[in-house]
Image 1 (cartoon, rainbow, N blue to C red):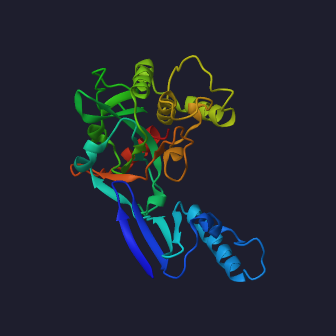
Image 2: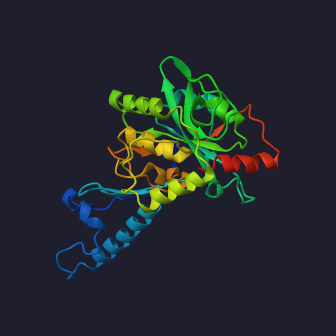
Image 3: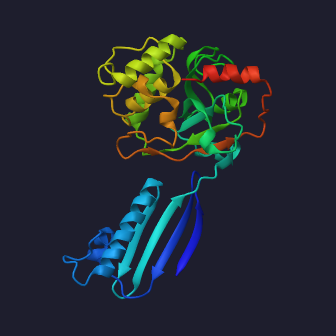
Length: 314
């Protein structure tokens, strides 16, 4: 018996395939061995089990490479069920007003820059060039965005002025003012505690007034961070900071990324689902959920898009 189900959560879509064999199952202690090429101690009289084990070991590897899950349930009197889960590629899009109440401090926001592919509907071709972090304050019902950018289009909520570099701005204002209309949230899956949030707030206070670095400074920082991660990790203070450096350092201060790695070595691609961040404490980011803002007007100016791509490049 074979069944197919489609399962959707707030930030994911999955296809679940179940294959059930109602004949005699295996003892629970033998279930882990079902993926082995050899199911028995000896190959004598076990050719059938050997073939099944080889086949399932290949299936298991294929499923894992596609970021899926395979599980086996088997009992001697009830048969065997093989369960395969695969993430679905079609992009999940949500109205901002419907999901803003779900945002928590630490969630990641991705922004698209200039894309070179004419096919803008495929997630594979999204050119993510800028990242920010959601900040939720008890006294502020609207979610804030913690980011570092060269843009001075909206005022900083805390400093009450427009500035480049690290900024705390209203998330919806940034989405509305951003000159492309493709952005997504990746929900941070971890338990937040007071120590983690306090460390993040202390970091915000530490770097909030800093400027955004010049292009040549960004290039130097990235080279040092990529090639000499551990050598350049230990620094007394930041003189300037770019967007992915800011977000990586925020996660480091929260205790979610290793402090032995240089925050300047992270790039926008590292924060997408195509990569796997080396989070600690079992934390991870969900898949991209694209955000739709009904009020957003699409920009038709190529000049503005080119300028936006430069600003969000790091």
